[in-house]
Every structure is written in C-alpha cells, then in structure tokens.
Length: 145
Image (cartoon, rainbow, N blue to C red; front, side, top):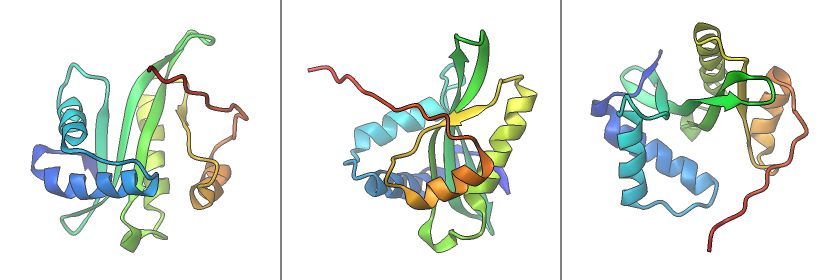
C-alpha cells in the first residue's frame, strides 16, 4: 500500500532515510532529519512524502515536489529521494512508487515526473531505463563557500 507519510511513522522513516543517505555516502545529522521531517508535514512547504507499507511496516519512501519547468511554461513533479529497504528489493516497490507519482502527475496536471540518480547507481538505472527516458542532461552544482 502506498500512502502519505504520517507523524507516527517518524522512527521507521528515519531508518529508511538514513539508509538512503548511507547509500549515497552522505553523513546524516539529527538537524537535517528534523528539518526534512518538518518540511514533509508542513502543508505550506513544497516537499511531500509517501511510503510503501507492507503489513504495517514501511519498506520504501519517496520524497517529491511540484517544480516549475520554465521552458515549457508548465509544472512537473520532481522526485527527490527514493529508497527501498534492502530486504524488500526485487518486489517492484520502487517502480510502484514511481507509478504512484505518475498518477499524481495526472491529478495535478504536471507535464511529467523528473528525477536524477548517480551515474554509479547501476541497479536504479536499469529500472529507470525501462520506465522513463534518459534526458541526457548532466547535473552541475555550484556550492557556496
């Protein structure tokens, strides 16, 4: 079952999100977790969260937002984070979460869904290549000092 992340899910969500950060070798701090958690539950903030639940256990999460796409004069959905517990991989949970976002795309009249992944994430790229088009764009980041 896919549903919105609820306040009662915090500990389960933290475990999955820390797994996501560990996968990408990003140190995770309580302050970051608290900030993201507050964003997910703030109706005036753009970040939304859904989870995949099996028998009252959250095994997958996705964070997404509405994003303007100026070149088309439309909005799109942007998938920021997607993570599935390693013990539940191979059950098409990531694909189901993306499919759910696709249904939100229709509901919200978005022009589609976009996301990025690291070039080394071969497992995810195999799935993404099956269900979406690789746009060929490269991601650059200019960090502040």
